[in-house]
Length: 81
Image (cartoon, rainbow, N blue to C red; front, side, top):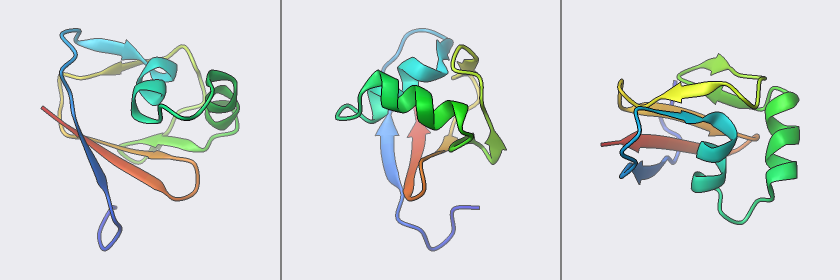
């Protein structure tokens, strides 16, 4: 899925096993506002491991790492422990 695409690797230091999607997006993209991130999620522009997530209150499990995320059109991230 993420072959030949530049990926930003984020190391997780979160002690929780699950985190809300909107909070995870805010941690990754610090410069974006929460309202803009909500719009991106609700419009279907956020995928986790290739699955489109459209609920801002859904929980993301950090048990199964690495997690590959795409936020927007060109921003790819990989969460590693």
